[in-house]
Amino acid sequence: MYQTNSLQEKAKQFTYILIPILITQLGLFSMNFFDTIMSGQYSTADLAGVAIGSSLWAPVFTGLTGILLSITPIVAQLIGAKKNKEVPFTVIQGVYVAIIMALIIVCVGFFILDPILNAMNIEDEVRRIARNYLIALSLGIVPLFVYNVLRSFIDALGFTRVSMLITLLSLPINVAFNYVLIFGKLGLPALGGVGAGVASAITYWLIALISIYIVHTKKPFKDYNLFNRLYGIALSKWKEILIIGIPIGFSIFFETSIFSAVTIFMSTFSTEIVAAHQAAINFSSFLYMIPLSISMALTIVVGFEVGGKRMKDAMQYSWMGISAAVIVSVLLGIALLFLREQVASIYANDPVVIDLAVQFLFFAVLFTLSDAIQAPVQGALRGYKDVNITFLMTLISYWVIGLPSGWVLSNYTALEYFGYWVGLIAGLTAGAATLSVRLILLQKKQLKIKTVQR
Image (cartoon, rainbow, N blue to C red; front, side):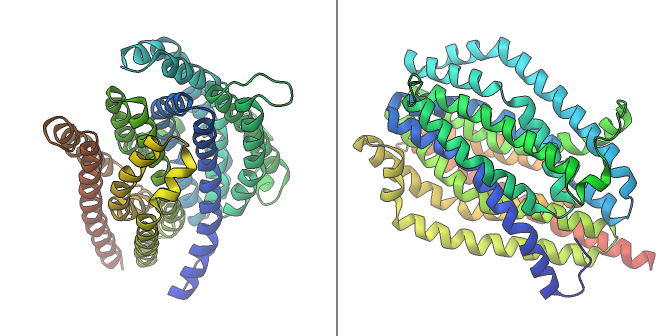
């Protein structure tokens, strides 16, 4: 990554960083995407079971790995400030934090998984599939969290193509294991949706091991000598990682958990409705990978410019990324509006599920624009290490506005289960508006401080 002097140079560097991130995110998401559609092809109960399991796992995973995303702005600012010698110590402390968090979540899950599933009004077979899917998935949590730290380090250096290649190597392996384990090929028993969990755990180990090999043996990563010495635990560095990371993690958790909460609330409806809802959520999440990738790229480039105290450049990158996200998401939303039936048919064979999914996808189109704004804005704010106010804004937007309004609309209007989706739209829109205001005020403040210093 290098300092740029014009909008054209910024666009070129931003695109160079963004495209591999996007491919990486699409690749990682495709694991869940193939889990869902391949389980749906096995049976509706397996689709619903994986839907429930994914809904419980997604906010935990994204929230905790969001904490580890603090490595990206920390390292990016160290590089921007030319403090390269501090990088390996920071990354290894992040690995320690990742391992501890992974072990804690496995232990907590051991005690609370059954009570949560037993409290849900779902069919016994769906409950069994969801439980065993999550147990299988838990076997890969430690390497998955370690991978996320190493990926943050790789991306912060601007070598996002390396993360892309790791993901592209692992994706076909994941699909192959899905096929063998879900449908019972090569003499193995057919595990259905549970097989998808086993396949994902195997894949998580592979991407962690590949990442460790690359970081240890390939330039420029090996120049940082991450694994050449054993660093002691430094609680002061853990504190820095967590002070920045916890608000990021909670912000992401509040956003993703509202979707999971909606799925759990909707478990009171039929298995067909749960399956159709999950299909629509899964595909809209697929489209969300674009603004999310732009968000991650913005954290890198904005963090680099802020570290070098180039506030005008940081502002230009911010609005370049937000504009790109809005344009692309609008175009994709229009396309989805006309292709809803074809998309729904990917997920299920049941005509009832397909018809319901088509209706849910209409609402998915409506919140693509809000997603296209709020995700990149959050990424830019993280580049500034501005995370605490963002955390409060997401809490209010999603859990004070979004979920309660959805519950009211679902239970007290004719919208029924569609009411939850209207609530999601309201929460995302509120988040997009408030976060945008926060970014504008922060940038004005930073430019004013820079002017005074001159």
